[in-house]
Amino acid sequence: MAAQDLNGTPRFMDLQDPRYAYMFGFLQADGHLEQGAGQKGRLTVEISARDIHILREFQELTPYHSSITERVRRTNFSASHHAAIWSLCALEARTTLNELGLPYGRKSTTITPPRCEFSRRDYIRGVIDADGSVGYTGQGFPFVSLTTASTAVGAYLCHYAKKVTGAERHIKRNARDSIYNIVYTKEAAQALAEHLYYPDCLGLQRKKDAAAGLATWVRPAGMRIAPPRRRWTPADDAELLRLGDPAAAACALDRTEQSCSMRLWRLRTGKA
Image (tube, rainbow, N blue to C red; front, side):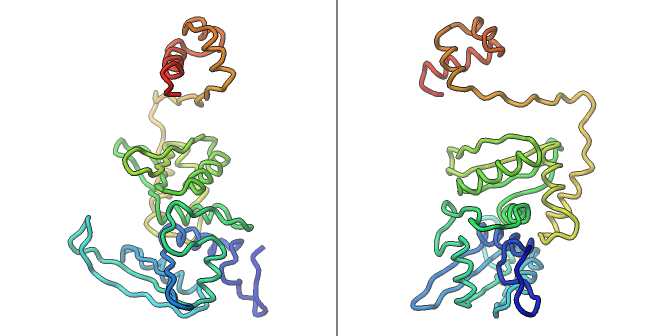
């Protein structure tokens, strides 16, 4: 249960409060905590002006003076990007956020889920609203995705989403920019979106609308459901190498000959 002060007001950044858990996840992904000389410093969040409503929600939740400004600037993607910036300078607020796990300076690879009790689905929704996507693929399939440089955050999403959807994901950095791209599609995306974006939750309105739209998808008749992937264990590898023959290993390990052939090649070439 979220803690309250003597006036019954929720304590600032009590992460058992769903609103603060969401806000903290969003700030970890999209906020920047800057430390100046002495006790000076600032927290800033810059997002597209179309989402300015969420910054106003953060301002309402914060019992310290803060400001919201707007600007138009050139970016790599637009000649006139209209942005909204929320700024918070109060030392007490910055200290609280820092102690909860929002580092000063560059943070993309070092952020981790909170180490205190927190509202888990709201925290994850905050991270996805800041650094993820919800919608339909080009092929018309529902999807929920997260792009993150943090191993801890990526692994936590995989762990949590498996409990919700049953879908297993194993994170791996992509070769181009060393980022994790974690994607859930079809029924797994529907289940995850329904769980995270529940009625009246705090969140970006456009992503709440997108999440609600995933519920209308129905798997086309005849579309095969892929069975859960069986991972190779050290014991499987040892038996495969001992037999040295994909056909024999397929019978012994109850796998396809093609799977055994590919795994044997990967083991022998050092790619596994």
